[in-house]
Image (tube, rainbow, N blue to C red; front, side, top):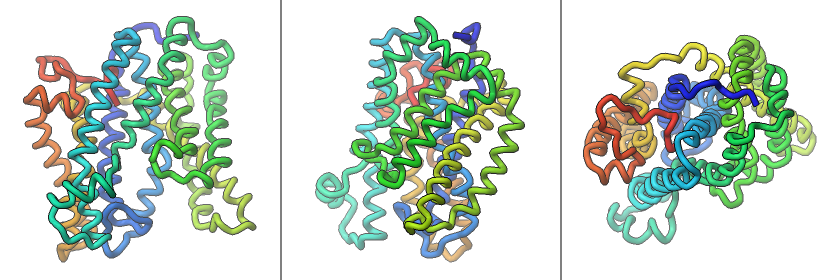
Length: 385
């Protein structure tokens, strides 16, 4: 196996993780204004936001799983298997449970108020209806998946760290063309499974998503450990970009083909195959450009690397609460989006300021106990998500 030579700070992974979650916040704010449904909805949909959602939807979550796999390599070099499992349980399971019991509740409440005509108070909803009818993890589904993947893949990852990757994998990912071939398992799973198992993020029957996200998670680990693979991606980034843009153009023409018609089954399979390839190409594009140009640190990165996890846990609840009221204002959709997104970042920053001051807040939101230690940042190389 061709490993990276030294354990150094990967600022590019810090940046990519931070930017991916910032994009997620903007994405969820924009989901209020699309026609295909979300927790709350504006009475009018916006074609601009629909096209924007389509543009980033193919690779935004795969990118987060890819980075999640990459940073595990660095985490496992600093911890034993037992320490790694303990850290994952503390920093993921506790925030997940707290989120489901407290943070996510307003999301379900406002959704039922707007769509279900729920007329009782929030307290009535929380003490009765929520736990019996609407108990959910909503956007925190990612924590369930990344915790499961981390624990399931731990023996394999430890073996690769100790004995190296199989030679055939090393040869495959040592050149830019071979790296593209890693899309094949994803393509096959999407063509065979996606139609039968739509994306519900319910974990148990979410077979298509598992068959998609788990390989991407493993690929992140593989590529992070292989210097030749990283060099090949950086060298081929402009070629990947050319083909990625071309595939996007083709996919937009496919998008409106009715997938339920028997005559279009072949077209649907072709669309899923091209979309899967496009997703993988854009992961390589983002990773290639990020590893080339995002190799520096500054105060914003140090702050964001610590704050990103609490922001992620809080953001969707804030979006839904303030969004419910803002979309009722007599102003344009663009101004509403600006108010919702900027308001979400502002409120997250205020709450984060208080969360990190107390040990209980740090525990419930997955922050390291020494997060306030001078000169130290909870960087992605030891991140929980």
